Length: 363
Ligand SMILES: Cc1cc2nc3c(=O)[nH]c(=O)nc-3n(C[C@H](O)[C@H](O)[C@H](O)COP(=O)(O)OP(=O)(O)OC[C@H]3O[C@@H](n4cnc5c(N)ncnc54)[C@H](O)[C@@H]3O)c2cc1C
Image 1 (cartoon, rainbow, N blue to C red):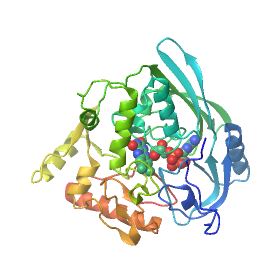
Image 2: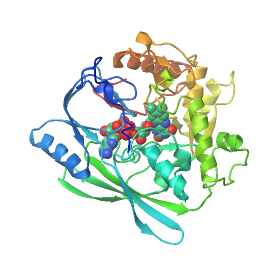
Image 3: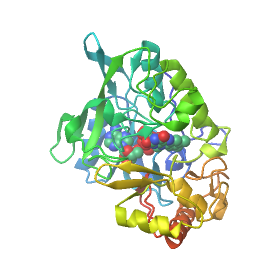
């Protein structure tokens, strides 16, 4: 299988191989103390343990599509997750459970499940990165989240020095969150997904996807149609990695959609009364999720809005902050993120929070 993850350039125009910019989709980040690839679960655990023995901080990095690494880099060991493989570990007449190594490229997995007639991941087509990173922030898109199909996660627990399995119920899955996010305690080694044997997708939940498929919300469609349509919609928003499209030099959505209680939501509606109703979705617990893209746009930061150093809002999607110029630094991107966060707060009284993991930088 090809290596689809970002790699530093080699050859005549070789970049500094220790620069983490070469390993991230933003193409940003300073040098690492050392970089150790792990081609199997055993190699990954060994590299993490060895660094621990040397008292070095450890950064586990896979596809680099959800991290913002500071210009000073990371003063420790970066373990690259490059393990591969998947196998069926349980099956019955209706379902198949696949165990997937952490470094398996996510979209290769989705493509394989669609080809095999296993339903459950099709709307997550085109999300960059590795399979092992999907539980970290409960990856989701177009009405599907990995929490719906993950049954367990095999982890190396750095606090205990042991490997074991965390059942899905104990993963603390929530909107773009889990117990693994912002914790360096667990290294994900493999993930189990239980999928349904069906040529059809689950009920389409996302209105934009249903419209593009020409069906009603709640209908099912052939798996390959769901995948192709999601890929087309994502590409139109710069949300599928494409070396020729500088709008995809990003981490996808930079901010999560804010989840507000009733009082905060009413306040927002009052402050937005002159421009219209903020797009929103009801959440359990009388909470309301609000579109961060709408808030950003209405606060005056439209598509293409420039930041310092060639950092800019994507010309295709208000939520993606990009290194469009290819020369922006992390400081430039962070300055743009602050400008947007502060502008949205001043206009609407709502605080935006970053979705990616920030490493040696802060907004
Ligand atoms: C164009 C684009 C579109 C995107 N669209 C979406 C989307 O629709 N939905 C969505 O949810 N996300 C989206 N993302 C974000 C990103 O692709 C996902 O979060 C993805 O799962 C990150 O995988 P990765 O392997 O690149 O993780 P990395 O960026 O390498 O790591 C992210 C975090 O997870 C940790 N980590 C990674 N692997 C492991 C492991 N094996 N064990 C322990 N910790 C680990 C890292 O330490 C870091 O904290 C998008 C990103 C881009 C660039």
